[in-house]
Length: 262
Image (cartoon, rainbow, N blue to C red; front, side, top):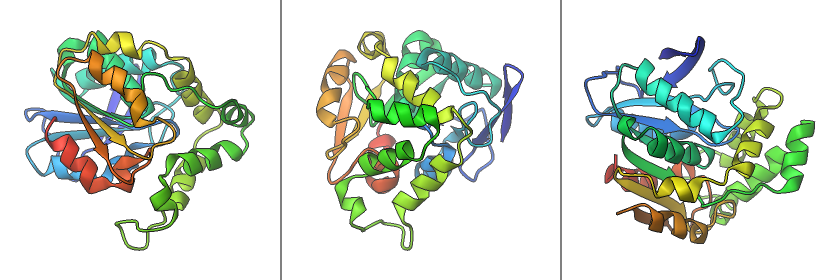
């Protein structure tokens, strides 16, 4: 499905079902350097169980027109425009990592457009290692290798993927390698400088769930506690034997956590 925001094409998948703006809608937001495909299982389930789905590519990612947006707040404003462009009054937002920060910011500053919120792989702050920023700026492969090495939980490095024949690290590297020059650096820099998460959390009024991995090295579960405490009524699910990419590492467990919220 294609939408138009600020005169540029936005691509979104609809979970294998026709998009119907009359149904409650869930908008899925991917993390830095990735695209809509990380939400394959979750988006399809919701699309076939009473929801409409938009798993979007952020500007400059996947099949959406660029350039990439330089800042979490700018991405949050863009999400609000996506909701409008789809003909919706409100939507639930499900975000991962960078997408979680964007969803949080949007829920706080565009509260009238967000009916529910799910934050996956999130932390109060998301500092990025200088080596990753340097590599991303230079366009070398090191940043992609570090993102997959640190992002995947230890269990998945050893095998055990629920989808037979799928090598998650290779798939992640393939998606990251397809990015246009500068996109990964723009994303990581946006996460690195964003310091408003805790303040925004106190402004969230909608039902909220946090979905965390107990072996997440990039956004450790312990670093989300203050964020959850600041959001009234927020619920936390910590998935066992799971790293940063819970929606593909532990897709069924992630789906179960999302069902109760969005």
